[in-house]
Image 1 (tube, one colour):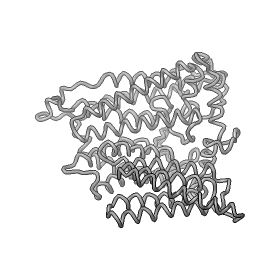
Image 2 (cartoon, rainbow, N blue to C red):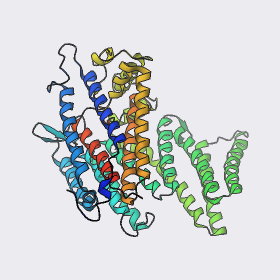
Image 3 (cartoon, rainbow, N blue to C red):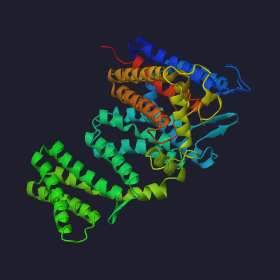
Image 4 (cartoon, rainbow, N blue to C red):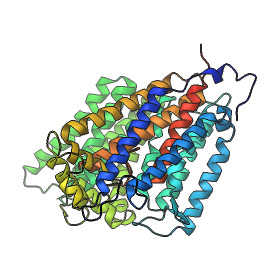
Length: 486
């Protein structure tokens, strides 16, 4: 489907073969490691045996290559023209999946069509990316206009809610990585700061929720102190008022000092109440600054403080009443609050044993004892990286991670060289997805991230995963191929 005329110059561009070679190399290495992870000592299937995981992955690889070839041949204007149609179809599939899909491994995210199982949530990654590119490339678009910001947020958040309803939390979090795209296109850094702050509040609030300091938990106490520090830092960063920064800290310190002096007189002090008073003093001081100087920034920072405290107070409810028990346990295991080596912590515990047993050089291909004896569940899907660690050791794991990092940096370079906003936004969406998958997957395998069940791109077993990543990547390579040369 190639148009003639105005697009003739652009069609002469070359596909970025460096990225294609990375793709082919990763898919091949993934296939070999899937074979190693699923290898059965008693009933060994060959690499090309379709009854085994490696044989089926080979089928997915072949269809993915055909898919990649077709995507490169489609005219680039097709992707932008029908971006919104793709989005509506994708949302429709998510709704159908939610209504008719059977529960598999705790989630209802798979459509079963005969012998084929498809996960529509995987394909929403490239669909959301196309929709964002289409919106950003519209005439006169400015991200920080309220209407535009609402539209962009809805494009990202609607699939998030639908996928969470399917109990597929990991994929929903992948969609949230698109905030990096918005940051590149003009979203103020304060939004990213708010996101990071929310994560810190959640971790502190849960990690230290068992102990009590007066009327509040230790987690709430420590988080209130962090909120005061963050509030003071925002004043320094956005208002360039170092005097106000130190005054906020001084007021909080004075509140605690007065309480300490009073406690020396044998008066019982509720330090939880004192922390809340210190936070309230900070809030009142910000309101005083607003009415004195009439600068809206003080109100925004005041709202940040109030919202932070409201979020903190909702953390316990969300953790105990919204998250599922297995999700709660995964978070507790990650934060070191529980061991549970026979339950939620079993995957990670066995994964770390497997990686550690590989040592510096590894045990060699098909020689991983933890792998062969099936100690690590889901080892050919979400935990494929522990197979690499056990059989190829520290050296092999490092080489794979460096290659993946170079691959992401290459994609970042391609995104920056785009000559259209549609291409650049789509390119950064691709970078965001791959980077998020890489960090979270490897992080959960080595035990520094919660187990949320997302695959390692091109390495994990699965047709939907491989198709999804292939489509995501090769649409971008087609866009890059057609960029206008200067």
